[in-house]
Each structure stands twice: as structure tokens, then as C-alpha cells.
Amino acid sequence: MKLAILGAGDVGRSVADLAGDYGHDVVALADSTTATVDDDGIDIDGALERKLAGDALGSSDLETVFEADYDVLVEATPTTLGDAQPGFSHTKRALEADRHVVLANKGPVAERYEELRALEAASAGSIRFEATVGGAIPILSTVEDSTPQAVTAVRGVLNGTANFILTRMAAEGLDYEHVLAEAQDLGVAEADPTFDVDGTDAALKFVILANVLADGGFALNDATVDGIQNIPGSALDLAAEDGRTIRLIGEATRDGVRVGPRLVPENGPLAVTGTRNIVQIETRNAGSLHSSGRGAGGPETATAVLSDVGRLPPL
Amino acid sequence: MKLAILGAGDVGRSVADLAGDYGHDVVALADSTTATVDDDGIDIDGALERKLAGDALGSSDLETVFEADYDVLVEATPTTLGDAQPGFSHTKRALEADRHVVLANKGPVAERYEELRALEAASAGSIRFEATVGGAIPILSTVEDSTPQAVTAVRGVLNGTANFILTRMAAEGLDYEHVLAEAQDLGVAEADPTFDVDGTDAALKFVILANVLADGGFALNDATVDGIQNIPGSALDLAAEDGRTIRLIGEATRDGVRVGPRLVPENGPLAVTGTRNIVQIETRNAGSLHSSGRGAGGPETATAVLSDVGRLPPL
Image (cartoon, rainbow over all chains, first blue to last red; front, side, top):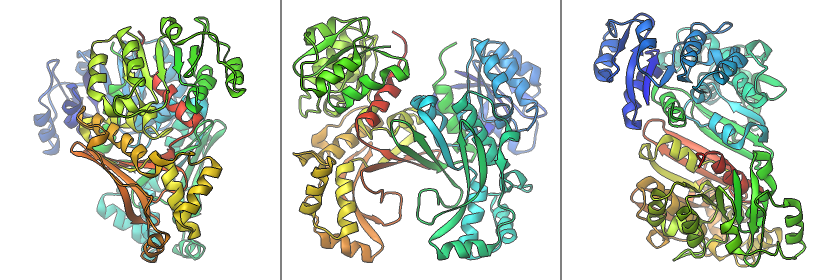
């Protein structure tokens, strides 16, 4: 398939870098200012070098990307809330041109799900968005293959930054501010870590899951969300005395979404450590499936994008 | 899709029972003696009642099944080794008639993989076999979506009977013979438990995985296999003193297959308990994915079969 990649952050660059390994071509790569476009395939290494050197990707613009000969638009621009722009418009434009869209951007899928599905129904193209939930862990494809009707709930840890912080607080008896600073030094937390530590990032993912289970009906505002910013180190010590620890746990069912810190057994499956993520998928006929792995990262998330590309029907 | 189901054991009956929930029709159901066939859809409840009452499924025979108007042959007859018959012939016949085949029967996939792929290449139909490895846990589809080239190894616990026995031996300090008898009473171990306790069942699954990773080249004879029959209760006590336990662990890489009892950390991911299965899928770009769940059972395995049916292209 020919990929037009919007977004040249970690995910967009990794998709460009790995596309060839999966048998796909990259005909466009764009960041927020410029683009490089070539229907015969862009010079991927050159583009990545220019990006990392701080130079312009190319001399084209977004219009040229949409006029290119592509099969799949990869929407990997930063997640935005509310109207989910410009990601929503990018997706709409590709679907209206009867092209496929694979999203790593959570915004449109969490905030405007029913509109996306309506655009998809009117298009020859399809949308897929494995990369929006749990990075490398195949969560949405598992729900899809089980059929959403057979899945009753999805629960787990879907934010690695918050999980890392809680793991370190428990392991070292350090307080939140201290561990947050450590996480930022390591690149595990961003300079502005708000969405990770206040639960918004996890909530977006569980909202997407609830939309898949219920075929729409949820946006971020519908989720009940509590973060980890107010957990004192003493809470983790107390939990440990009882053989438990604290994790930022989310749950999606057809009835709604909740994210918040929970006490979990110290050695149980939900007490995943470091930046790792885990989901428990509860099914009608097959009990509980647990999947864990790396929930974030350029190459990790790119594998989810490319896995989705592999599941698209030919146009 | 229209399913013709060969095999009316736990798996075959569960596929018949659940097919409607997934939007599929059942046009034939056969056991080793008779069959019930109806191009407009068989009376599933009636057939299941007759089977459970010990009566004949119907008045048709295997020939009539192959002459029916079906899209997918579900091969759920008992696993046989070596020439993998009659499962191999059933599969061959359907592929030569340009029909799809979804296997729950490990024999043909473990023992005659390259021949199956050659038949598939010459057919308009495809083969899928998620149900042969790990029951409800989506292992093969995860490897497929990651692309086999990106997967370096698959390791884990894929036999619930052996795992149950080892879990109980460690938990209760009982010896092997005692716990085996308990497992048989519970229906977790069969009257003849040989293939479960000597590692053959696990080895077949890891051979199938090695065949997928390497695109063929392995059969059961190529695997190095040790079972759990000779583990004394004292070995588990000693392991526990070190914070470890024993599990029957298999590993498949492109270079081969090994199955045998291994020491694993007591609270680590491989120390899954009871009849649960777990795999660790090691990937080039996305680290290690862990998936656990119910590795066996009629409905559980049927969900894998029906998940495969959902991924088949139209004929």
C-alpha cells in the first residue's frame, strides 16, 4: 500500500522508517509546516535526517499531500480534544476521497466517533485505529476478532508514564514530585506531563474502547477521571503492608468509562511495572484474555499502525 | 459464511452452537460415524441434542458433507500424528474444491505444514489455524499482524493440564500421581493424559509456531520434548525456597522447538496458574508482548475458530 503520513513526531517517523519492512511505500511525509511528496516513493532516510537536523522536510505543503497518489492516510498528528482538529478534517478529507485512514491520533476516535463511522460508511475507504489504544499490544484487533458483542468489558493500565511513576514511588519510597522529575529526565514523562498524570490520556483510550464496544456514544466528557497527582508516598507504603499496590486503572464497558487510582494485588496481573501496559478483555465465551506489552514509543506504536495497514482491504 | 464442521467433540459442537452469534450458518456437522447436512442450514439445537443423547447426528455421511454448499470447512476432528490422517485428507479435499479450511486439529499443521501451504497456494481457498495454538488467546493472529519476520521467538505455557498439575503440586505439596488423579476427576486431564503430561500437546503447538515463523521446516520429531511425569513434589518445594516454581515451558524460534519443565520466578509472568496459558511473543520493534487466557475448552477454542472465519476473504 502507498502511505501518506501526516505527523513527523516519534510515531510518524517510525512508520516511515519501518514501512518498507512491511512491504509498503511512503509517498508523503508531513509535519506541521512542510511536506515531502513523491508518488514514486519519497527518500525516507533523507527526510528523517532533515527532520532530525531541524530542517524542512521538503518544499511541498499539505495540499500536495492530499493530491498525491496514496492508498492510506496515516494520521499521526498530535492528539487534540473537543473538535479534534485538524486530525478530524484530515481524516474526513481522505475518506471523502475514498481512501483508507489509519489513525494513531486519539482525538477524532475518542471525541467524534459516530461522525467518523458515518464518513467511513459513505466511503470506499475504511478507518482503523489500533495505534490509539495500547501501542504495540493488539487490543482493538482482539476485540474486533472476538466481535465487540462478545466482549463485556476491557480493564487495565494504559498509561505508561503514570504506571512508571507509581512503580517507582512504591519501589523507592519516594514522593510523587521526585519521581515525576526522574521520569521527565528519562523521557518517560513529557515536559508538560498533565495528560498522563491527570488520567486524560488513559481516559481517551478507554473512551475509544467504549465506543468500539457500544458502537459509539462516548466522548472524553463522559468519562469519570481521577489522576495520580495527589497520591502520597505513604499510601503506597500502607498498601504494601497489605500485599497491595496502587495503579492507575481504567475500565470501559458499554455503560461507560472510569479511570482512577486503584488498589491492586501486588503480584497480580494488573500490577504491571514500569512503563508497561496491560489490558484484561472480558469475554462471554472465552473468559478473560490478558495482554501486556509496550504501550507507547515510536517503533512500538508504528507496529500497530502497520499491522492495521496489513488488515485493510484493497481499494 | 457457510460452515461445514467435521468433528462433534467439544470444539465442533461449540462452533456449531456459537456460529449464529458470529453471523455464520452451519450447513453440515459430522462425527466419525454420521453427518447431518442441509444447504439451507442444519437444525443445530436438534443435532447437538442428538449427539449428547448418544444418537446418530443424522442419516448422511462424509461424502454428502463434501458435496454440500459450504464456504469453510472447519476441521475439528481429533489430532493425529505422523500422516495426520484423516484430517490432512479432509483439508486437502476442501482446498482442491477451492474452499477455505479453518483447523482446530493440530496434526496437519504440525506434521505436514509445507504440503498444506502448497495446497493452499494452488487453491482459491485459504487455511487458518488460530485454534490449534492456545485456544482463546489470539497468538497466531498477533504473529501474523506483526508479520512473522518481525517476531524472533514465542515462549510460554501452552498446556493447561500440565500447568494445572504443577500449580496444584506446588500449592498443596502433593505428589504428581495424586494431583493427576484430581485433574482427571475434574475433567482437566483425560482418561489417557499422555500427550498432555509428556509434553507432546505443547510441542505440537510450538512446532506450529516454528512453522509459522520459519515458513515451514518443522514437525513433531524435530522438537526436543520433556514432560512433567518425573517431577517429584520435593523439586517444587526446593524451588519455592528460592522464590521460584516449575512450569512446562515451550519455546519456538526459527531454529527449533524445545519443551520441558523449567524453573521460573514464582510471581513472574510465566508462572501462570491453573489451566491458564500464556505466551511471550518477542518482536524486533515492539519488545515483548504477553498474552494469557484460557488455552482450551469447547467455547474458548470455538471463539478462535470463529475469529479465523471472520478473517477469511470472500470466495
